[in-house]
Length: 334
Image 1 (tube, rainbow, N blue to C red):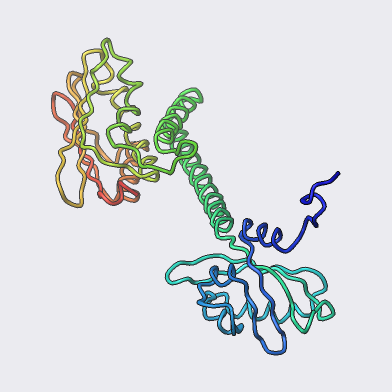
Image 2 (image 1 turned 180 degrees about the vertical axis):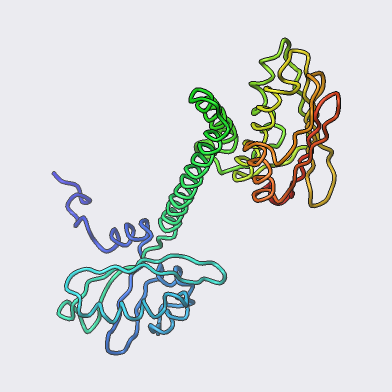
């Protein structure tokens, strides 16, 4: 014996209405002769309309984003000649809020009932926002890949010009790219998290950690800078600069001997500039370079000027070189 529920029609009006409301579907009917629309309550709520009676296409048009309005009007008019289903996505304005709506229906005049075409509205704001995020991510990824290729090309050229052998060039290039990799690890977002700035102190410490391990004792590299963020683009530039300074120190300066020490410091002060002082002590006697310097020096100066809107100065003190990096605070956070 079957129950009353089982014997009743499965898709009765009440159950259909319940399913439609649960799915967030809004119903509409458009009379092509009078241009009037009949909307259910879900549709009125979606469009921010006060009632369901006497709504015209122009009433809806007032809520359509101005950039989409003509396109939507033309699409609805053209739907009368479309055989089969059609769909159009567009933006609507509810106050200051922009939402995406998908209108779907059945085309062709022969499919009309009482001179009206029928369809549904779906709120697809979430899907559109996800699509826009994916497009933005793809564009950002493409931009970064191009930048990395350009940087790799420049580093290859610089390394080749300043190297005395293939092995020397390979070592220089590998170390420079490794420095970029360490900087990237600090600024890349973790799964499920938004992109965040790296801390200046963390970035410098990570970049100098391999040189600290080369000494007879750990702790000969000291980093003391204010807590401030470094943006993704600036982190790459700063990584190259720190790496070049450390490489020079390892070859000729304080990091070339076990007794040498390196102090990287900055005072926290308000203003448009951030000043970092690189101080070496305990290394071999240093002499000021003459002329424009090597390609590494040119790389540092070009990066400081073009990328960080700053400058670099060197004081060739007898006890060790002192390098002062002056950077634009806004550029550093970019």
